[in-house]
Length: 132
Image 1 (cartoon, rainbow, N blue to C red):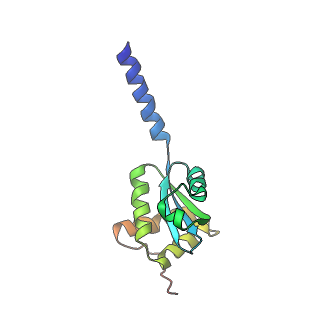
Image 2 (cartoon, rainbow, N blue to C red):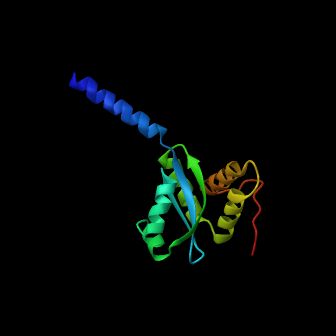
Image 3 (cartoon, one colour):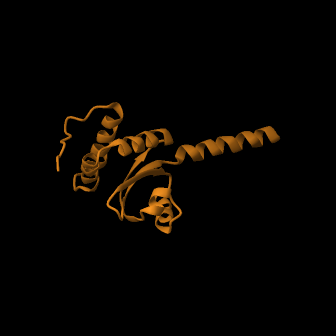
């Protein structure tokens, strides 16, 4: 019987991890910079950043606001999106955040297209670069 019990625990653990969704979040810091990270619980992670228990960068540059989040089905996809956001120039990050916080109904889909294009090295057709 112990083998069946162990197997069922593994199956349940697998189902629990499959139900978890990973999110990429973007924080604006007090110095005006943007910080991107991934987590399964954005509210708890943001609270950790605010309390000074988050990443080293946000301990030195406390967060001002949580600007947005995008949900991904697994950790791999979220990590790729986070890396793509971190590689973006400030102008591109501002455009992404404008899309995320804008009034459009499909803003999350558009934001994901921008990030996906950045991962693959191209830009979507509806992306406009803004030069400040």
